[in-house]
Length: 202
Image (cartoon, rainbow, N blue to C red; front, side):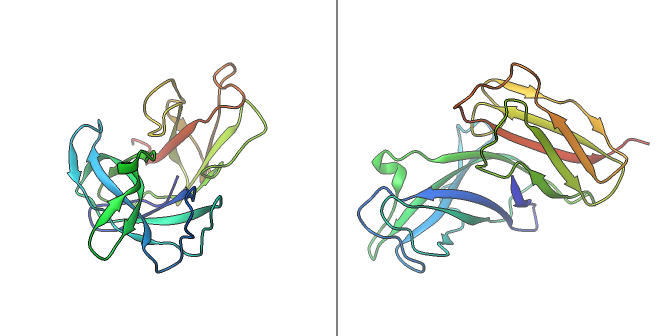
């Protein structure tokens, strides 16, 4: 879930977990940075081959993981697929870890002009484990009386694979919730969810 949504005029922020499986320690301000490539929504056409390079906030030793708040530059209005990837920024060249067979972290994003409606909190958090097959997904908006929509899927873009969708849920408070249906999830598997808030039609 995005900490701050990306828009045509503002950077976005999203938490990404990175894991160091190599022999060198990744140090803040060093040669290793978190970045991304921008693709069309289907992930087939490359739009931008060099996104914002986020510095690591602390050292990551061999076998360690770290949650990093990644910055994403403003994007023209539309839907995209971002593929997050670590980079080694050397003196003579910059290389992506995926060039050596390391998996990227793909996530879908929609950039749109602000309408006054904003999601201010979401639960469960990114990368959080839950102790139930029927978790309740929660979004909090910046105003009351909003419509909320939720979707949970088996693929990292939270838009493909096996998916379950809430439909529109109205709320008189600032919070919308949806409990994942019976039989949708299985133990020891990863799932990815997303949601949005919008104004009710008058």
